[in-house]
Image (cartoon, rainbow, N blue to C red; front, side, top):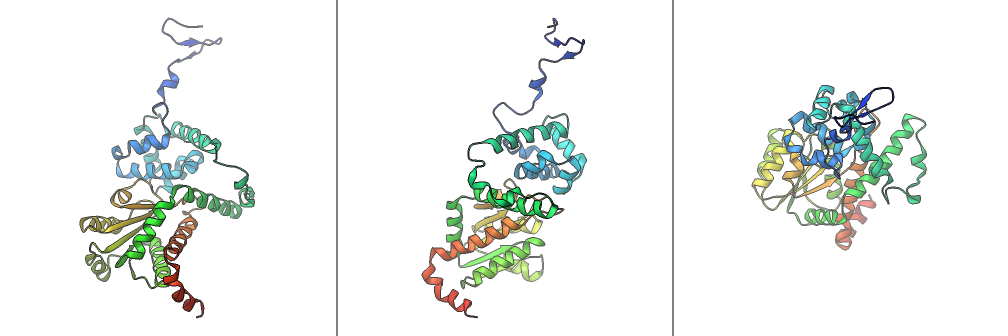
Length: 304
């Protein structure tokens, strides 16, 4: 029955607030990811790390503990809780429930799954090894969904036409920058890598001009050197491309183009399977733009 104050009273005498559902902080019709993205600039630096991770790794946020999510986002569990409260939730469990709701809607959306996606890998999961393999398959699929063909073709054209390509990646990202440089070298395209703040590396950055294409590599929060390169490139009117697993960050805002890759992983470190595949696909797109021009070069390489 109803009390005079508008709350409903159950048979055992407990009172359920009729306005309880109105306490949901997310506006009607908006997803958690969209809500976080819309309010991104309001958050502190550490809270932005959590925001980025949830938006780009919704499945993990939906089912991990606050401690696990904090470790993945390189922050503390208390920051995860404060971030939840900054969004208007009582705590992390309420935010996680919203993440689960969005994840379920994505999973049941038309085209989200089907007979074509019933790969044998997706039935794995009896061990940590199998789970990791299956997750990488999902990462490849998610990356393919979020990178448009137009973006890839435009970036491939920029690489092919650039007088000079400078790739900036620090720590583990330096390997992937070097690998792309190797693939382009096979096509006789000039590319350089900046992987540290050494005098030689900074000299490479100092020489960039409007004829240079600057490509930055990022996993999670952008390294200070990567941001420095992106800002310098913008100041000097260089074309810029960010290859990143964070779709919302200062780096992507500074870049003309962003190629996103999914890095979800059940392991203790992020997966780079999709990143490696993206790099190889990009190099192949460059080659495909003018196969005749590169054919003799590739034939000579294969004969070695």
